[in-house]
Each structure stands twice: as structure tokens, then as C-alpha cells.
Length: 419
Image (cartoon, rainbow, N blue to C red; front, side, top):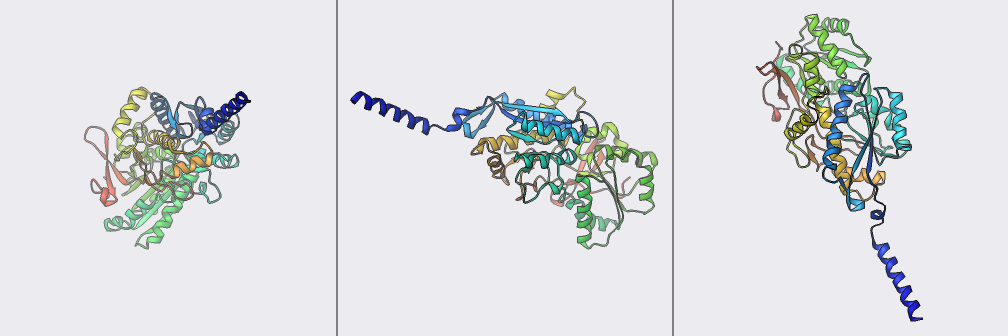
């Protein structure tokens, strides 16, 4: 009887020890699977491939140190990146996002770059109750109160992007003599909402300026000669052109070929993808253009991860011979990894909403190569704001960027009218 009691006691103690041990520690996976897409062809490789390559740098850096620390398992676990080529096709992307969730059963889902390829992921992730980590799909319609399954990691939502352009044009611009503004945009979720937001900000400012041209064109537009002539006929003091890289490239080339020189010209991607734009447009076509200056150009004080010079060296070491250009999306892919790394290290579990909670806990605290990470209640990025700058020659056959707005960040004064 005494021996039987001892056996029961031993079993009870063992049971208590098993119960006391972290349950997740017994089930730690061999790898944390992160699923994403990239576009090697079609319309969006200029955005997608740098972003994908940036994520690969983060994965390699984490795995070189034994993996990412995952709090629920109390250990470092290697990260496995599962990636498929959607070829810039939204139908293909929809199929592949579903495959990552249902067949690969990834732990974390990351969208392809840009709003077009992100747009199909949003409803799929929501229906599967899978948190979508959105690189830089900034369409404001993605972020709603009834959808807790999305977080924007690397760029402000496009409804607040236009603020610096509008503020500049309605204050400094008015002092320079800007009164008539033309806006040309590609009709996608990204630049379409950007254009509407810009118009709204300008109208709300009640400044002595007038929007004399407001026109949208398909994202597939490749010829702007007629459009440029139509804009010129309105006699604008400032022209804002917004599209994806293929739009900016075609517009700026046609502008140079036409011999037209608007007094104030804005385009998005001379700042966001400067190497790509220099390679395809050239310094002559870019000189004087106003643009946003993102974290691939502006140095931020870093609290976590590599600084911009450190990251650029890592990029050149890994991809120096590649045709993929270094720009903002290269930074975005790496920054997404840093956000995930912080979430894995602090989450209470690997449940999707627990990961979301851990990411939200970093809002206002996480300072990386991309600036200060800050979210609103719907998961839209409202930090990481990019200043307004202008392209100037650096005297060595290349370009340099001068920050002109806001004044507290300015490194020079705007040239108006442009030469």
C-alpha cells in the first residue's frame, strides 16, 4: 500500500511539473513560416522586387543569429520565407495568397508591395482570420473598423500623405506666386486616394489657389504627350503627377521630349526609387522635380535594427551585382521584418490577434531605419511621414535631394520656377 501511494505521488508530481511547463514550449515548430508574394514581371517589379529582397536580408540576418526569439516558445526559432511570383497579376496573387494560408499554413502573411497587389489580399486575409502585414499598400479603404486583420508597416496611409504638398503649395507656394494647380493621377487605390486627399487639403486651406486641372488615367497609361499638352493649355503654376514607377517614367520622359518645362513639377518616385528613375529617366529629366523623400534618402535615429548606412552596405554586399535598384521599397521589406521581429519577441501567443496586439504595442515606441512606427485604431500607419524635397544636380553627374518642407527639416530652399 505504501509503494502504491509512492507511485501515485510520483505521478501527481510529474503531472504538476508537466502542467507547470510552458505548453507552447513542447510544441515549438522547427521554423516560423512567413508567406509573401513578389512580382518579377509585369507592371510592379520596380516596387515588388526591392521589397522582397529587403525581406530576404532581414531573414538572413535573423537566421545567422539562430533565428527570431519567439516569446511563447521561450527560444529562438529559424524563420522560413515562403514566396511565390504573382507576375503583377491580381488574379494570380489572389490564388497564391489563398495557397499560402490554406496549403502552406504560414504563421504570418505579408502582402506584395503596393496597393494594387495588396487589395486582393485584404478580403482573403479577413475571411481566413489571418493577420495581413501590409508593406506599403496605403489605400485608406483597406483599413476599417470591422477588420482587425491588417496592419500597415512601412508607409503612411495615402489619405494623409498629401498633407506636406498641400501645406507647401498653400503657404510657401503662394508666396512664390503659385496660384493655378494641375493634378494628374493614375486611377488605382494608391494614387487615386492620394489625389482626392490632396484636392481636399487644398480646398480646405482656403488659400488663394485654384485647381485648374484634375484628371485620372489608367495605371497602364504609357503615353502622356496629349495629356501634357492638355495640362499646358490650363497655364498651371504647379503640376502634380502621381502614379506608379511606370507612370512617372513615361510622364517624365514625355515631358522632356515635348520640351515643356512646368514651373513646379511633382512626381512620387524620383524620391522613392531614385536609382530606378536615374537609370530610366536620367538627370536632365529629373532636375528640379519635387518629390517625397523617404527613409532610403533621409537618415533617422535608429533604436532597433540597422541604420541606413549599415543597411546600404548589407544590400550592396548581397545584391551589388543585381539589376534590382535600391530605393524605399528595399528599406520597406527590411523594416517589415523588424516589425515582425519585435512582435514575435513580445507576443503572448502565435494567435493572429495576439500578433496584432503585439504589433500595436510597438506604436509610438519602435524607431527604425524607417522612422517612428505609429498606428491608428484601424491598423493604418500614421507615422513614418516623408518630407517634401527637390532634385538637384550634385555637380558630379548625379543627383542630390534638398528637403524644402516642413521648415524644421529643411536643408535648403526650393528653386522656383525650375530651370
